[in-house]
Image (cartoon, rainbow, N blue to C red; front, side, top):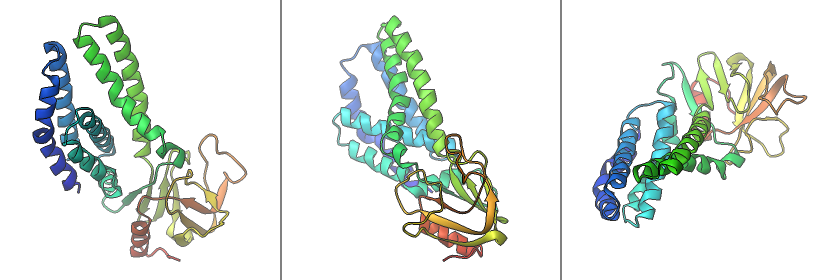
Length: 275
C-alpha cells in the first residue's frame, strides 16, 4: 500500500503552503482565492484518491503529484523535493499494482503492463500537463475578470483535459491477469477483447529470448518482455491498425509487465510452467 505517498502528500501543505502564500500575496483577491481553492481542492482530491484502490484514482494521484512538482518548481520552494518524492512513489509499479487490484476478484491477481515506448517517452507527460494546465488557466482568467479569453481557454482546457484524462485512464486498463483457469491478457491497446490462455494450453512463461519471432504485443515498451508459449494457437483479434497475417491466432506472444519477476513468481505459485 502506498503509505509513503500518503505521508509525503500529507506533509506537502506544511512545507509548500507558506511559500505559495507569499507568492500569491500580490495577486488580486479574486484570482488569489481561485488559485487557493484549486490548490486545496487538488490536494484534497489526491489525498482521498490515494486511499481508494481504483484505477481511476491512480490517474488522479499521478496527475496531482505531477502538478505539485510543477507548482513547487515554479514557486522555487524547497518543498519541490517532497513533491518529487511523492511523484516518485506514485510512479512505482508497486503503487500501480495496488490501485488496479482494488476491483479485482479475490481469486485473481492483476499486474500492470508498461506503457508503449512511443507513449512513455513524450505523450504520457504531455497528457498529464494538459489535464491540469488548461482548466486551471481558464479559471484564473475568469477570476481575474478576463471573461472572453477565460471562457475560451476554459472550454478548450476542459476538452483537452477530458481527452488527456481518458488516455491516461486507458493506460491503467492494461494488465496481465492470473485467474484460476489460467492467464488473461487485458490490453485494449493491443487486443480488441481480453484473451484467456488456459493453464492446460500453457507450455511455459519465460523471459523473452533475443531474436524471438513471437507475436509482439509489447508496443515497443521499455523493459524486459515475457514470452508466453502455448501448445496450440489461441484465437485473438488485434486492435485496429494491427490486423496482419498473425492476428487470427498465435501460439507464442510477447508482453511487457512492469514487474516481470513478480509475474514469474505468481505464475510459479499457480503451477504455470516457468522456463
